[in-house]
Length: 250
Image (cartoon, rainbow, N blue to C red; front, side, top):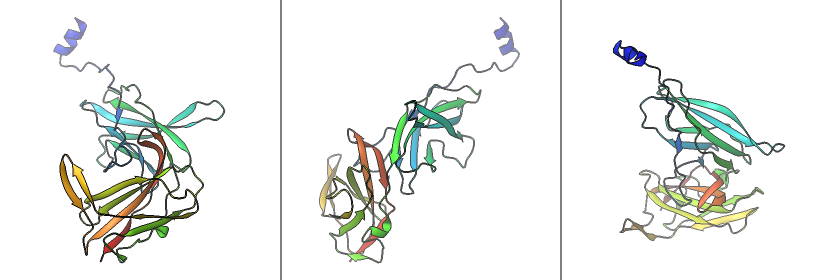
């Protein structure tokens, strides 16, 4: 009867129900483009992405990061940021961890907070570790002034003794950002020598439709090298991305 009277008088009853726990965007497999989910970035950071809740009273997301404590063998978490959904200058469904360093595994979880300051249960915990990336200075060709054939040979070197298992080359049209190819392959030599990869035209089949993928004369292109390790299936839990390098086809 008391609650009924409060409602009849037009007063708000405090929201006692917490929001649902946040859900991360599922991480894409190694050859998928565009990439989704937790990942290294071209700037040497770790990108986190989650599914924006359809509950209309979510006000904030709280981001927690942890590292493994070697003494206790437990993960020590701390809150590293709060995403305010009322702030138009913040992305509501992703976060860039710019303080992550290479060769350190980080663990992340999220909490959602509603307008009544109720906290959700935690999301699942994700983990990722950054590798040192390939520097653009060792990537050839690297500039739009570099004129190459329609089947260019891309070369680079990697001189870090880290647990890298595979390369992934991504090639896009520079002007249209059209996807050309994303190729996943093992290094010829893991440390201290040059690597190379040659583009060859191919048939790309999407939803039953075939497209002949080739590089066109006088077109400009960009390419990038990802490094992957520590797989669960075809999904890496350790990696890096180079900055983009460029070339023009003669």
